[in-house]
Image (cartoon, rainbow, N blue to C red; front, side, top):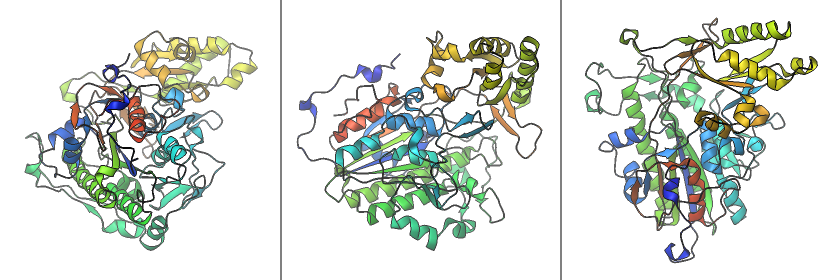
Length: 525
């Protein structure tokens, strides 16, 4: 069902488009991971005039960009924004997929056919099965430049698409700006930074401390201690690059490189439309000693606002904001892994995937005989041993059906759907949402839902690798902003489908929508 179908928008007549045939010189797309509308509103009085407040005052402000997929993450939501299509169509089911051959999850964009540049990571956009906003702009302009930079590798590549000049990200291994040999262009600003001012040589001097006094932060409960936090990234910390990339200081690094791109590459000054895609973060800092880390989260927004102000000012100086299209969007979800105090008595439990695998395997052995019938588990999906099932001449659909029936009876499992139930005419609303995200070539055989409030505990036997995730369906509003010549400044309170953003920006740029985008664009003029 369309959520107000973005007000059941029809194609606006050409008479409503601002006069003049001048094409915009520069489009800048900024995707902020886990950006929340309530925090933007909460902190507006603390923000300056040139960041979020400028976007709100001068552009269209969408309060609730709605993604409506079961397990959103930075990869599948960014793909929705840039393709205008759901994961089942664009091919990006999530950050990782389960590889049956190795019995291990792997990055969705992993591509052994390519090699890394400034990294040993191997990525390419080959898994993106449709065109993207960047692809369509590049196709329409032919000589337009398209660059992408982010802290996250897959986000950088998804924003860049298939046809961009380059996509760069900050490596988890050594902090260098890295890319794939799929992309041929390596800007001078990147090589200068990697060789002359590498992050590894500067990071141990960086410190994240509060921007305000503790009592100046908004809506902090009285029972919370007003203590100043101090996060560092020491050389002897093997996870320091990961910690850094999840801090607001990483936004400063990305913004600095974006400004270098604008000046050194002369983006928007070459007689055609250029594009710069930027990935920033507003995610909660999981390495905080405070499970709720409310002050850190607010401080992340304050520092993010200052970086957005820097970007907008640089765009204004380079080409004039009236000659640019600026789009800023959230990724539409929020990871809240804080646990409830047991004294509150809120229902909860623990779900152990490894134990579920063992029980399911024993059940299938009782029916079909000895063997390792379950290949593995990843992210809510169980993968059966399809080679064994085939060798025994057993119907795969039958084994899937029996497996889902068994898993439904486990403690903590609120629902279980087999492959066929999701693929073929899903009957329930949740099965339909799973259908939207199903990429059959990499989909699991049975997908479960664990009850809200329960913890999913993986690698429980290893203190080092143990992972716990609390199941929480965070019903939060996430924003998007569009600022361009002729776009009417206003606030849209009704939910707007995330798949409408790409066609709407395409219309502003007067280029074709991505080839899998079905929605009509918003009427922004």
